[in-house]
Amino acid sequence: MVIVMNEHATEDQVEKVIAALTQKGYDAHRSTGATRTVIGVVGTSRTPLDPREFEILPGVHEVVKISEPYKLAGRVFRPEDTVIRMGDVAIGGREVVVMAGPCAVESEKQLDIIAASVSRYGARILRGGAFKPRTSPYSFQGLGEEGLKYLRKVADRHRLLVVTEVMDTAQIPLVAGYADILQVGARNMQNFNLLKELGRVRKPVLLKRGMSATIQEWLLSAEYVMAGGNHDVMLCERGIRTFENYTRNTMDISAIPIIKKISHLPILADPSHGTGLRDKVIPMARAAVAAGADGIMVEVHHEPESALSDGPQSIYPEQFAELMTQLRIMAPAIGRTI
Ligand code: PEP
Ligand code: MN
Image (tube, rainbow, N blue to C red):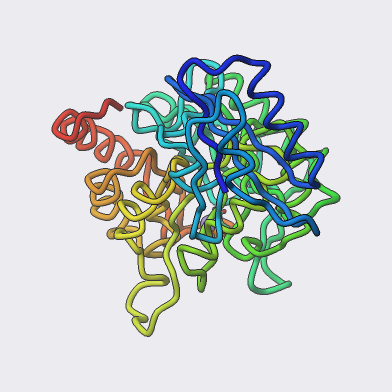
């Protein structure tokens, strides 16, 4: 249920509605839009809610029942797009934000070479895994805290922000101490304990789509984080498993306009994991931006032949430069900047 307040509702009226909900055992989430305040009602309680009781409260415009299982992540709760601001970077606004970097942080030198080039060509955020969720336990697992230190140092040097994966609840304080955005990987999209804990954190969360997750399941995972009080969630389409095995995953471009329609959260696309093939990354990045993505995440490596993970899908810095040139030509045609 969503309670839409009048345009001129007073603070006192909003607070009284919230108090009435809390008293009945529900959680009230407030969204202050350009013209009016909307209160999202979530949670379970033994006291059933009667919309009529709220319709008559002073300052209430209307009470809307939400039929979708996700509430806070849906457009009804927040008709305007969510824009996540970090310093001079805004995700979900007019600018298409580019996140780039290696799959895994391998050394300070490796990260610095890659960060220098992606920053020169216009990336705003440095990606790189310090904790790596690898399919095989014998593959490189990441440098851990050492990798986080390099990420922070190198990103600051090149005036970039940091996005990196957090795999476990126990790692949250450590990763949050170094990163600007906490990434939840595809394999963890339904790690509900992790999602709940991230709801308590005051840092934006990048939630990758699980490789077998429906759009509704994905939005419900975002809902877990939001229900905990952290509304700064961005989604990232990274390909799903289908019967097609030419590519590593099947990049679901149609998820981008679908999310735009049913959710207010920013939607990004990762064509590197989405295809798994270097020569498919640029065309799919272009497709994602054309479909309305608020940003892209791409893996870049200066020596992908010797990369410790995902070399075959990492593009060369020169290819990244070419991609940025193309996106700069495309963006204005769809009312975006880059
Ligand atoms: C990554 O971005 O480093 C990663 C592991 O991606 P995914 O979780 O989408 O597989
Ligand atoms: Mn990777």
